[in-house]
Length: 238
Image (cartoon, rainbow, N blue to C red):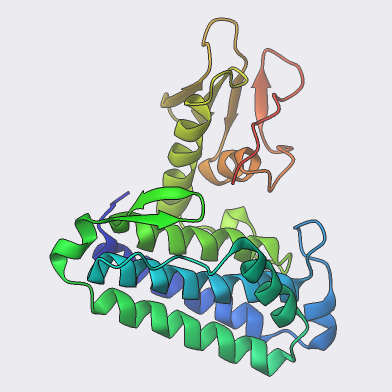
């Protein structure tokens, strides 16, 4: 589970290729179909992924130049751009995805080593520039699942699923009063504790199933709870 942005580029390239293959299979009706995100079609999801690439290029530019380049012009502009792009023809959607992904790769390639130590201002607050490649990989993999087009959490590479699981569990554990639970990976004794261990239910499953449940992309039907009872309700994820 490396945090080195350059080492993660191979994983990002592979994830992007998988997403592009799925997007290339869509026609107008496919793009107009509902995604897993409430109120968003698949077209919305793809437009968001493309605009996210633009936003991350802005952040890489800020890290490289030291200038305060915002991720998006504004929250309203971000929303408007996604809405404007959602209904485009399939070939335009695919071309936008390809071009913006290429721009992100080019921006990474132009980053001097020292620029990765910068802190940039994302729309959610400050973030280390060194985590931007991971952030882009996370966007690609999670939103590929959101397309509801046959790509699920079980298709995530193990390294991605494990890293996402650890990241989200750590974020939830830092909340003021998270629901208590112990997450246990199938086939091992490794556990992640959220909240107070005492009396907390143990939720066991594979890394992809646990991660997808924690981020609200799965109902947790593949997970086992000990003692018997309902699954805890995870906090809202980003």
